[in-house]
Length: 66
Image (cartoon, rainbow, N blue to C red; front, top):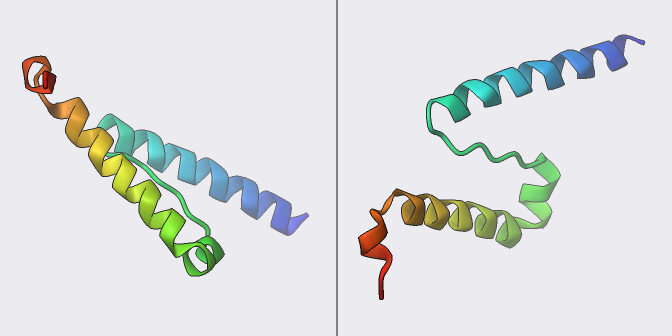
């Protein structure tokens, strides 16, 4: 019972923090510790994709023409 309540409080706190960061314009990405250790390349790809998406979305529309 203790752990269920604790995890629920943590999830609620994390969601509130995520909303604040999103409102400020940050991109929020979550990884579990084991994912970082076991799937490092995939985690890095997620980060790289988020950076590129952010850069593309911040360009004026006329800069997107090739």
